[in-house]
Length: 185
Image (cartoon, rainbow, N blue to C red; front, side):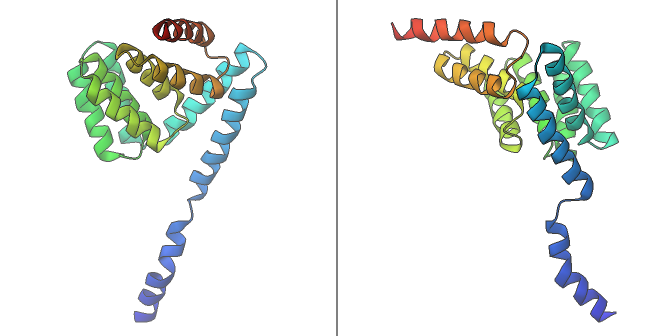
C-alpha cells in the first residue's frame, strides 16, 4: 500500500503535466480552425472557420458552466446586465480559465456602464487566450470610446491579422485610420 502511494506521489506530477488527450485534440483543432480563418478564400469559408472556432471554445465548458453562460448571454441580449453579471460571475467562479466567460462578463460590464471593469475582464480574457478575436473587437471599441484611437487601431489590426474577412472589418479599419490620422493633425 505504501509503495503504491509513494509511486502515485512520485509519478502523478508527470502525469498531470501532460494535457489530457481531449485537450490536446481541441488545441490541434483550434490551430487548424485559426489557420482556416486566416487563409479563408472567401467570406463563406471565413464564416465556417469562425463557427468552428466558436464551437471549440464552447466545448471547453462543462454542461453546468455552459448552461450558466447561455443564460447570461440571454440576459445580456435582453438588456438585463445585472442578471447577466450574476450568471457570468458564477460561470467564472466555476471555470476561471474559460476565456469566453471573461469576454461575456466584459460585455455585461460595458452594458451596465462600467468600462473599467469591462476592460479588466477583456485583459483577463486575452491573457487566457490571446487569439480571442471577439475580445479584441470589444477592446478596440472600448479604446475608441476612451479616445485611445491608436490603441483601438492596433487592436483592430490584430483582429484582422487573425480574421482578414471579418464582416465590416476593413470598413472599421478605414474609419479608425481616418480618425487616428485626424487626431495627429
